[in-house]
Amino acid sequence: MSEVLEPVVELGSAVDTVNALAITNPVREALVKDLGPIANKIFAYQNIAEDSAVATEEDAVSASAICDEMAAHIKTVKDHEVLSTIVSGLHAAHRRFTGLRDCFIKPLEASRKTLKGKVIVWQQAEDEKARKEQARLQAEADARARAEQERLRKAAEKLKTPELKQERLEQAEAVAAPVVTVAAPKSAMKMQKRWAVKSVNLAAFLQACIADGNLLGYVTIDMNKLARAKSANTMLTIPGVEFHQKVV
Image (tube, rainbow, N blue to C red):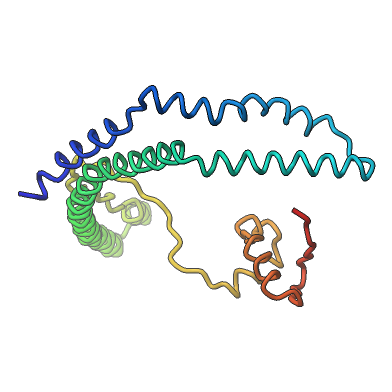
């Protein structure tokens, strides 16, 4: 019973979480008071960053001082207690509502997948039975056709007139077994057939990439992982990979 009620309980809890996020006037005033002066400077900082030329030591010192100012503002915004509380609450609400969604979707998807799997197993079994039955009936039809051909050929041997014998042989050659089809019963379930990769022989695949460069489109190089490896071991060298240091 608790499992049945869980989505309902989660829904009520999620609503309570959102209600707790109501931003009062004092909170708004605190945000405007603390962050308003920074907001008023953002456009000016953008212009300075775009238009400033750093060509001399004096320019570099001045630009560095402005960067320090912006860093201080960034820290103020990140560490602002009221804003951080609101952001944390919104994150909690996001988690709460995605969790609420999962309370509905996950069990429904799991149950549907289980039931659909049973339908697929049944359908595959029925298709296989139909295939075997079709093969059996086709073999019988082929055998009957061969027997009729043989009968006509033997009958032709007994005929004295060449014309009649040729006619009977042509009849034998014209005998063909009908094409037998057996349709398997179908469910109303919508199904799709998709290709999936079962396994990859990495050595063989890399050899194929050397022979056919088009296959490299299926290869992804993790450059961030390579950079971390270089940071951990500055002596690291890898054929085909060129490292360089960036100043940030």
